Amino acid sequence: MPSSRETFEQLLAAALPSAFGVAIRFVRNRDDAEDLVQEASLRAYRSFHTFTPGTNFRAWLLRILTNLYYQKYRQRQREPQLTELEDAPDLYLYLQTRDAGLHQRSDDPAGLVLERLSMDHIAGAIDALPDDFRMVAALYFIEEFSYEEIAGIVDVPIGTVRSRLHRGRKLLQKSLWQLAVDQGLVAPLTPEAAAP
Amino acid sequence: MSQLDQLTCQETFRRLDDYVDRELSADEMQQVREHLDRCEWCASEYVFEEHVIQGVRERIRQITIPADLLSRISLALDRETVEPPR
Image (cartoon, rainbow over all chains, first blue to last red; front, side, top):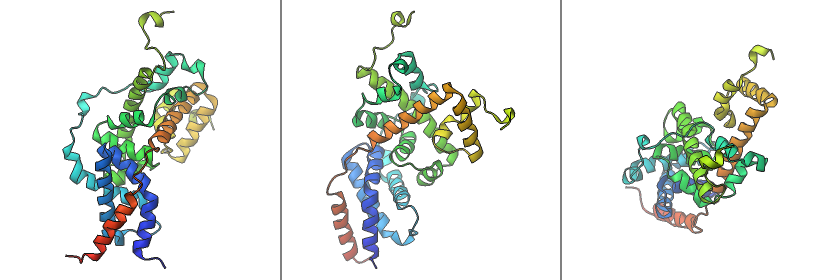
């Protein structure tokens, strides 16, 4: 029978890409992300006796990592305030791509936008979200957690996760469109070009 | 399903984010699915939103983790194990 150390390391090895992916979006740099994952792993090991075998180890580890982030890292960063952000309208990217004629150009207009964007572009767009939105977005995009699981990890009500996620996705779409335009996807619409 | 049970475009749109995330009740999932089956406009919005999310997921998961991270954690666990608890 494997020791609890062996079992822990096996579970940790499988969860590490996810934990690092989430951590780097939380702290927005690799060095702090490594420290955060390492310290969260040590804390998880110390309380491994409280983990229920057969339940979701990644969610359990990410909850520890998130608590640690709240305690040690969150205050250090200067965050954009919500009031500084303008909400993006509903279906922002859909309507921009439609108005730019991309729906005629391809069956997959979203793909036309995304193929212009690298991982760094997308990571940068998520990193520019305010902290509360960024945390929920990181857990949502890297894992496929339910709202309830995310709520358990970040310790807020499910309704709060839902609204942060929906609003964060819209803000993200606005950034993605701007980035794709900057990458030459389409020329920004001018009044002359938009006229019939 | 009766006409009364059918969702309008507006009602579907209000549920679209939750539908994409499979966060509606089974009945509501079914109602939205049926609306999308018969409404090309809403279906195109849904497919678009789903593609954006999938595209973001694919790229954001391409992060490479430091090759020695697990072994460094393992070493730290060794130190943890030999140090007597205070």
